[in-house]
Image 1 (tube, rainbow, N blue to C red):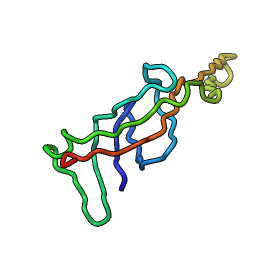
Image 2 (cartoon, one colour):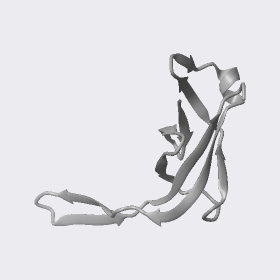
Image 3 (cartoon, one colour):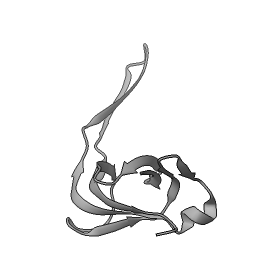
Image 4 (cartoon, rainbow, N blue to C red):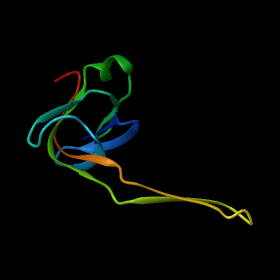
Length: 106
C-alpha cells in the first residue's frame, strides 16, 4: 500500500516504513506529524482517487531530524559586459519516517 501526499508544494510517494526528506516542517525530533493532503492511495488493485474518500485519509509520520541540503549555485552573466552574479542556496528539510497510512475506511 502506498499514498501520494503533497507537502511543501511537492508530491511525494510514501509507503509505511519509508524515510523521506521533505520541505521544513515545524516540530521537534520525535514528534508525530499527520500529513492530511493525500492525493492518491493505492492498495494492490484498489486505487482510491475520489476527493470525498481522500479527505478522511492521512499519513502518520515521525520527525527523525532537521537539516540543510547541499549548496546549489546560481550563476548569471552577460557576455562582454563584465557582469557576473554568483549566488548560493541551501534548502532546509525535515526527515520523516512514515509509520502508517490511514484510509477513510479505517
